[in-house]
Length: 541
Image 1 (cartoon, rainbow, N blue to C red):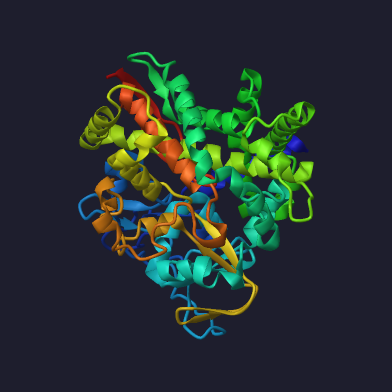
Image 2 (cartoon, rainbow, N blue to C red; image 1 turned 60 degrees about the horizontal axis):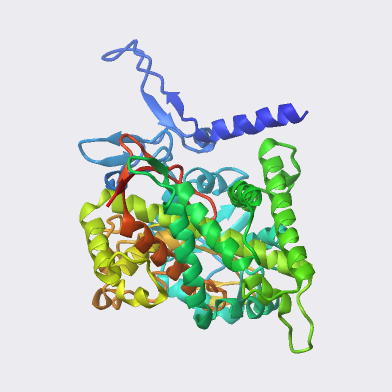
């Protein structure tokens, strides 16, 4: 039985990726008689659409993603006209429906499948899908399975639900599902539980603690690059994850992780991140199906529980305050003198690991990918690092002087942010001209906002100077939200920016990373956007 389910799972994955060609009957007489008909590449959902014979529409497509060295993931079965640079979608679509229950007319996103709704599009082509929604309005209806969502595509509306109208907003269904395996940690909790968790964790990220953390960041970055040799092909995505993991282990845990535990941690974290995204999008019953992906996810959860539990037990045994985050969590007391339970500490540590290691590691990997493709930007970073540091390791006091390097970090965060976040209304709210009832599920995409040409000229171009103060001031609130905003804003944003700037200064002070010839880099969506692999050649400076 498990083998049959594994085969079924493999077939479903193949089914969602494979194009289907439908052959229309040819004429029976006259010119063209006898041919076998026109071949029309269609998606598998085409057989469910009516009328499937309607001629497809043609839409303009921005191809800058290919010029940036990242493979653009168009719909399987789409056809490209190289002369007109246009894309013929595989789905013809229908006239958008409207929600009669709202004050304003709300368009439905096209391309829904029977039963599954837009879940298939979100799993197959997530970035293309979320960036396409703005063409249908500031508020767009879609469906994940049987659950309807309102997608918000305008920064003013996103800013409203995150800040201005946040009292009527909670995190929503997808975060409730995430809490099944992240518990009461900051990443998944909502409302009063999140407020308590934030009060417990926030002192660990106080600005007075950042200088001590940057010293750890510098040492970890030095240990990573010290292993490189001139001409070596470096798996930069893996190296940056190692760097982020090392920073987390040496700032969060009392004595870091041993070599074996570090390897186990490194294997478990990607499996946990991938499995989380699959379980968020698929129905709850999928978690009970005995297929290989679910077994990998369960093993990763158990590994994380074992490692974190061991670290907590070791700290309780010594009782020593080493000045790390875990010491702070263990000694934290509320107004009634009560401390955090072991389960709560475990949930906080796991949430910080998922949020910090994979996201920061992926952002740093993308940053070096962009530097490798833009020599002039790389030369400016190297010149600034040489001028400010003069050959010595970076320190906390150097961060303000590394202004251009900081803008490179911000531009990388713009290009590769989280791709989808959800919220839920707790009362009826007004979003522009639309009245949304209480209990409605909302969705917004930082990736789509960051790539909207209304707010960012040439959004696929890597341009750090768009973050010069005079240019950045023109951005509307809500257009750039790599760390979120309001009550649920990332508690470690300052920590992450310091870590990335320290890492870039350390690497660029000693090395130049060149793209590996012939390597193609694909964008893979998990909780955030990762390179599928990133081999680069290390050159000593």
